[in-house]
Image 1: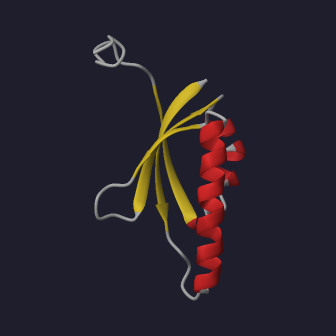
Image 2: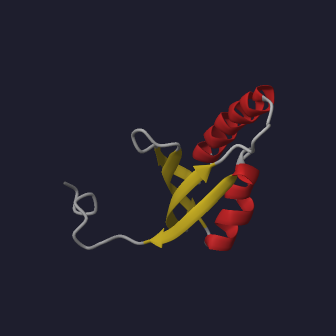
Length: 98
């Protein structure tokens, strides 16, 4: 499995009814919980004051991440994804148990 840092920006199309936005956001929360339980979504952050998120995700490879994880998010048609594969760094404090 490969770890990825994914920056997600969501832009709701102009004219989208609020009920549709609310429905998709509720479905998004449920899907994120499922992906966390399955081990694909490890962490998720929102930069303060911004409408985007940064997450630590796990998948077999980038194609698997995009097709079987990110594109299954209910908001994905409104999202852009900036995906970066990452690997452990030898000086990572967490890897050394600190």
